[in-house]
Length: 274
Ligand SMILES: NC(=O)c1ccc[n+]([C@@H]2O[C@H](COP(=O)([O-])OP(=O)(O)OC[C@H]3O[C@@H](n4cnc5c(N)ncnc54)[C@H](OP(=O)(O)O)[C@@H]3O)[C@@H](O)[C@H]2O)c1
Picture 1 (tube, protein in one colour):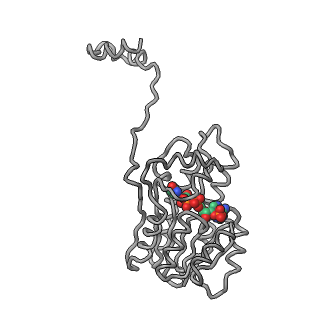
Picture 2 (cartoon, helix red, strand yellow):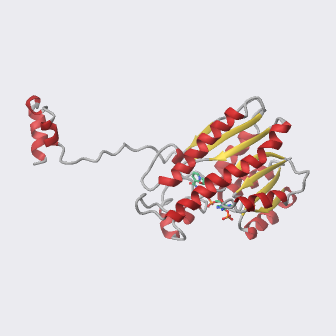
Picture 3 (cartoon, helix red, strand yellow):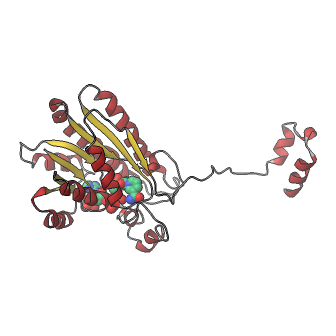
């Protein structure tokens, strides 16, 4: 039995590989950068098997799975590989970035899951742990397609639960907020490391080890227990008000016939906008 972790060459994936290997599980760590995977293999020894795989290309995923020995059974698939690219508004964003995010975060994740599920269903056991994001629930400016891909991951996770009822296969979606100590923002800002570093200045962010602990905790829950989703933010991160774009609104108020009823306070406010 093995744990297949995508995006194992950095960030959450590397931390989860360390945590699962330390807990005594065999880990298959997948990513594009073989050198990073080999480094991790050097650190973790026989418990860690590197698997070079491009989640942006279904043929690469298929070939990588094909290269595994036939007797390897995946008891847990951790769909962690993913990325955000850019923070431009939807009218200015690079469409190629959108395609890369959709291809990696949605198509690759879905294809791999589809390939792994039959063996889990046949065994009547197994676990799919997806790494979503709070961006899949809470919109923010510039989050456009990234957030949408993570909303897909959230709904896909829930729909998998519906399909897998009665099979014993569990599904969870981990939805992290601001997490530092990964390459996430360096990738998002395309190598502008200074801009990436600024995001984490003077903030006690979540660490990759926190996400790894969570994934391991989920995996070790009893077989009858399914955590559907788990949303994790640093204490330092919270919610803001929904912004309202104000126009020169008061004449419109008059048009709606409220002017006659205006109080002296209302008149005063109105005078501010004149
Ligand atoms: N950090 C955060 O604040 C945060 C918050 C919420 C959710 N998340 C999510 O958590 C997951 C991991 O993020 P992270 O912070 O650990 O980022 P990271 O440090 O940049 O790691 C991303 C991992 O994904 C792999 N990856 C990216 N594109 C790939 C591709 N086409 N094929 C195969 N592997 C690919 C990378 O490996 P290679 O480059 O070697 O291929 C790397 O190992 C992502 O899904 C991200 O959206 C992160």
